[in-house]
Length: 304
Length: 217
Image 1 (cartoon, rainbow over the protein chains, first blue to last red):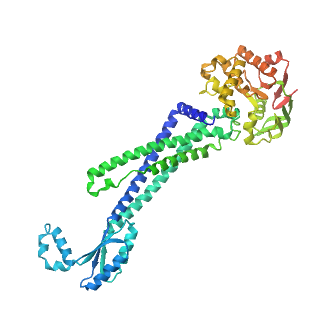
Image 2 (cartoon, helix red, strand yellow):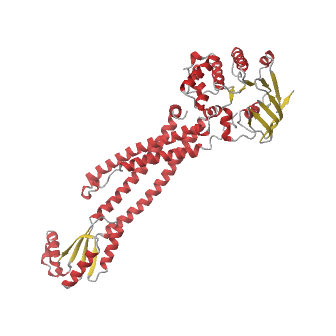
């Protein structure tokens, strides 16, 4: 009854009500595939931010006509902040040379424009020592901007901040969709268990009649719910993996210059195991919540 | 074995299903319960099998106060009785052996014990040769014998049968009644509800008549 009989009951339940099980399985698998794919997508988008954060180089533009001592003081202050692995001074002349070498083939007249020489300032190019969140990079930028003699700080902040806001909005929307789908999934499990209880009511009465306790009667339903969620989660993970592969193929062929296909990874082994265990647990708990009122010892009272 | 003391059962309406029922059935008795439809037989069986509680009055069966029994104790009470229904109530996806074995499986007995007892019970009802058949493969009379074997397998002190021959032809009904005689001879208390007075007349057994929820002397 306790072990072998539970699986025997589940087997016969599937045999007798295949369409109920199949439809529940498909609905749960689709729901979980959407939730897992969204989770994976946003986890990877966050990876893009981290990846950009690790590549951030700050251009710290200095005021004109600074004395050498002032420049050295600024250098010292930046280094003392402790966030940079390298702080390189770029003179006004080398900045202009660099600019011209890149731009002269597009706009040859620049090379002759002596006025323009004064527009490009001397600067420090500071490379971050480690990957930092965007908010922290912004805060470092602000503190550098307060140093006397620093005119401006640039690290492509608008791009990153806009992407961060965009990502945060998408993430919140995705959380909401996932929540709605998860609640829907929970009701699907409960509804299936409810249907099965009603379809197998006579069988339950026979068990009651023979002296089965509530837990003995409920166990197959709880295990059934858990197994349904376990199998759905495994299949949903497989589908999510293939969706990721398709997405990476697309990124590789269409957006290779962004290098995103190397950032988009699947869940780790621990995350996979945790997902499967969590889904199984949820399936069991939801089934339990739906079956616990089923057998109070008087279940057949209204039917005899 | 069974004591009803001023038992009333009233359903919403109000419908008075049982009124002032007083019964005292002793261990080893064989009692027939008769009465027209709506007389209260089914209600009385619901009380006996702990599917319902009386509105007022005391019901004591096999040492259990069924008017006060806690829901968690009901399964343990049911393990002390055997119940047979008109519609057999067999598990269609279990073979005959597994259907009969069900009460023992619930009691947690070992495979060897179950095998021995099931074959012995099937012997008693004459169905040992069909142990691996499924309910849909056997006749109505055989199904009822399987139900009786299942009701007896755990050696209950009391066997209650609600219209056990209601779906059977006269020959098969005779068979079932003879089987009840055999079971009663082994010391099991029996309460059998039936519409068929011919069986009652042929047996000198206790007879309880119900009419409109009251006992008719």
